[in-house]
Length: 117
Image (cartoon, rainbow, N blue to C red; front, side, top):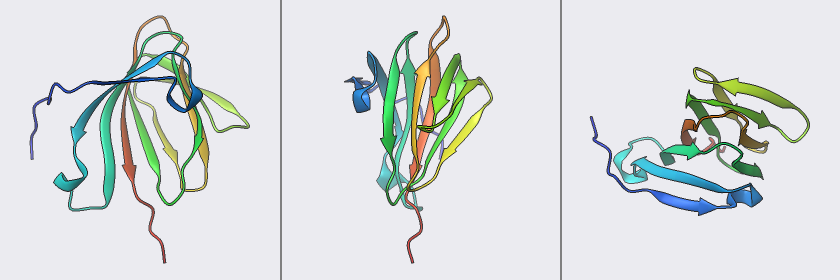
């Protein structure tokens, strides 16, 4: 399936107590997947903005950094990230991301639900 941008942009302020605004553009809806994926979107953070530390329960989250530079934290350690990096946060883990660069930080976020047995 090939899609063209739906042009829908959602502005979330202080997402998970982060700084500033996160611009979210949904790419696919959960009903377009055959797999149990509840979220797939392009996220843009302008310089200085962030998504605050939050935990994932019964789901994982993947970030694919498309543009810009930032810092990802797991609550204990922080790591620099830039275009080409991929980040996996597993169920039960926490993470945050902040744009530490001078241009927009753009990432694709995908949340597949974790397998439960």
